[in-house]
Structure formats: C-alpha cells, structure tokens
Image (tube, rainbow, N blue to C red; front, side):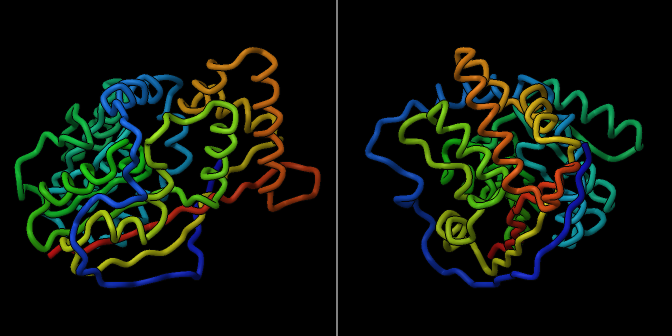
Length: 298
C-alpha cells in the first residue's frame, strides 16, 4: 500500500472579524465528561501503530510546511504531532521545532527520526487543550490530522492562539466530512456510536468552523482542498491495514461481537470500492480529501 497527495483546484480566502466563542456546532445541551472522552481517545491512539499510517501521509506535512512559509530561526510547535511528520518538516525548514502529543510511544519514534536526520527538534508529552508552552512563545503552530480529534474544539483553538506570538502563523490539515476518511468515520460510528454531545472532529475540515473557532484572533484565513491517495491491492487489504494499524478502526472492531465485526469489515470494503477511482477490478486507488488552512493571526 502506498499514497500520494495532490491538490485540487478549489481554493477559498476570507477575512474574519467575528468574536472567538463557542458555537452551536461545538457545544451541546448534553453534559459531557470530556476528561473521560479524552482518556478513551488516548487509549485509542496508543493502540495499533499510528506511525505506520503516518508514513503514508508524509506529503501532507511537507506541503503544509511549505505553504505556511516557515522561516529559518522561527520556533514552531506541531500540536498532536504523532510521530512527528509536521515537526520534522518544520525542522527541515531551519526552525526550532517542538512536537507535542499525549502518546509517549509516538513521541519516542519521533525522537528517533529526528536523531537520524540530525534535526533541531524537541518532543514534549502534552495535551492539545493544555499545551506545555508559555504565552506568545512560538512563531507558528502546525497540526496535521491532529487538533481535529481534541474533544473541546474551542479550548484547543484558544490554546493555539495563546501560545502563538501576535502576527503568528497557524497551519492546519484536517479530513473533510465528505472525503474518504470522513466517510470512514461515518461508517465506524454507524456500528460503534461516538460519545453523545461531542462535536465531530470533521468540523475542522470546514473553513466555516475554523472561522468560528478562531474568531477575532484571525487576520486572514486561506484554505484549499487537497487529496491523499491511498493505494491497496484489494479492498480487503485496506480493511486489514486499517484494522491492524489505525487506532480508531482497531478499537471499533474490538468493541463488536464477531457478527458485528464481519458487518463492519464488509461496509468498510464497500466504502473502499465506492471511492476507488480505478474501477477496473484490479488494485484500488482511494482519494481522500482534506482541508489545508493557513491562518495569519492578528
């Protein structure tokens, strides 16, 4: 299995002056134990081995680092960094890069990668909703398929603004609701429902939600859709790969009885067939759309 990443023609640019506040998209009348949700998420992302999946989506981080126009000498933090794809991409631009994540095994893998390349990188264990950084301490904040999974969207956005210096840069990459990975989560939650009252992570894949979250902190915001193309020999190979290595899929299967597992596997294979752009009965190529956004802060 391999992947490539391409950009699509659609782009959008807007300026926001709205206030930074929680919105109906990220709040609910349901009382939610976010600490319990986060603890469960941490176990999920500690399962499987996300570094195996991350190796297939490296270009998303490289392209974000380039588009964010990072400058040598800057301090850059990669939030929910996993094993450091965007952290290392930032360091290759001559920055002092800091990766923050709450999965120790992924941080350790990132340290090994940075050491092998001789890069100026620091990895810290921490939470996207309570970053282990001082106010106004970084020039840029990056997150690639990371912040979108923090349960408290507004608090996460506020933390990004807190640690960034005035005029700083924020670069975000998030799966879109209608793309393949977005639909993968739809299939998973049709078998194993998401916690009630928790906003969908896929909202981060819409510019409207980002404008609402970052509010008056935004000077300009520009987004474009790109595609990551996953390649497998068969739909069943895709299911096996994500079931083994991708925490959310692995945990969904673990939560089901054998009959439910078979049904989920069948639905995921059907999803792969639907998104396969080859449609020739041979190996499959599955494009998954994500939103790449660069924000200039006030």
